[in-house]
Image (cartoon, rainbow, N blue to C red; front, side):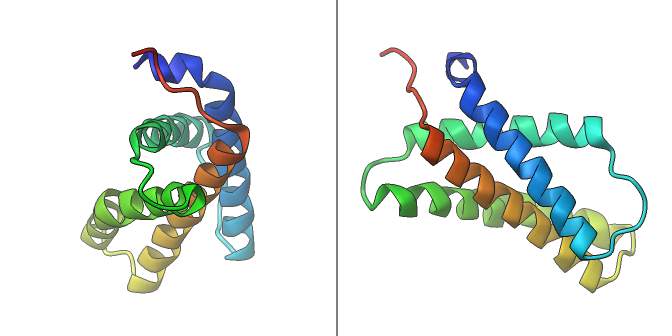
Length: 126
């Protein structure tokens, strides 16, 4: 987990970028109420740290940009979207709301991956 400390700046910048994109996304979607900023900051920071670790470990089998954004999409499709969908449907949120929230998280993760790629990540010592 030392990679999180080593990459604190890229992770922080990507987290803030994700928060801004999420806020804009929800504003454009007409979401009611105020977001839980502290909870969102902690959740998006942790998600971004995990994404950073996945990007550091990703094999160089394809174009680096494809790997960066593709990794975010795979994590979203494999973990985030299913959990969000099941949780929201269990709470009887309409499908349109589920789709909106899932797409929010996809946008956040894609932006985080782009920021992490642009800023750069440092792998932990071997």
